[in-house]
Structures are given as structure tokens and as C-alpha cells.
Amino acid sequence: MKTATCPRCHQPVNSQVVTCPYCRTQLKAYGHPGIPLHRGNGVDYLCDSCTYHTDDSCNFPQRPYAQECTLYENFAEYELELQRQTQANSFGVVVRNWLRHNQALMLLLGLLFICFAIALSAS
Image (cartoon, rainbow, N blue to C red; front, side, top):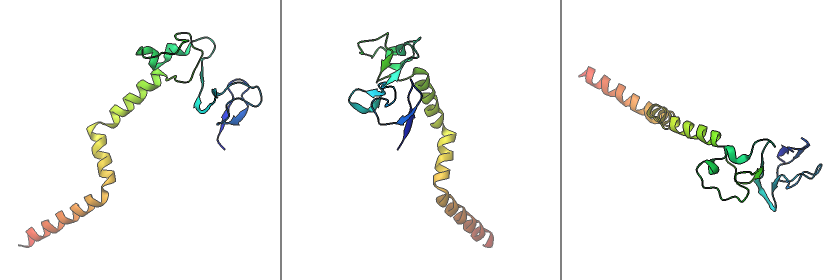
């Protein structure tokens, strides 16, 4: 059983429950236990840091004053993920990953090179 913490009463609860059994706070989108319900901190609106608000693709009726949202995606975290993906696709990282996944092939090629060098020096 995976556990989560209620944002209101801070009690441990099952991560699949829709409402907190202690304080009855709604934890998931109503009727959808697989969709998390994101909450603002009470001061700032979720839309201020949401990717969908930034690119103007949000159609949530409470926009731009939403305190709760199921589609919220933090723009700063989205930018960090894009940077990680860009760094992961650099040439050096790609070559290093290829070498790590093909160590047996590199060992075989090394042995073939040594055998070829011995054959050339013997003749």
C-alpha cells in the first residue's frame, strides 16, 4: 500500500483514496482516484506557475484564479526536465551510453585488433 500525506491534516493516507479519512479533504479529482488534485498555497494561484497558463492553452473555468486543478504542471519543473533531456542528448553522453550498453562488442573488437596486430608483426 502506497502512502501519501494529507495536505490539510498531515496524516498518512493511502495514495489511492479520494478524500482524507481524518479531515474529509478532497485529495483526488472527484470520482477519479488516479488523477491527483493540485492545490495552491492559499496566497498564490496555481495558474501563476502553470505551463498551460504560460502557453495560453488552458481552458479551466477558474483560470487565472485557480486554487485547485487536476491538470497543473509546474513551468519551472517543465523547464528543468527540458534541460535534462537536452543534456542527455549531447554527443558525449550518447557515445558514453552506447559504449556502456555495448561492452561485449567493444571487447570483441579489441581482441580482433590485438589478433590482427600480432598477425601483422609475425609476417
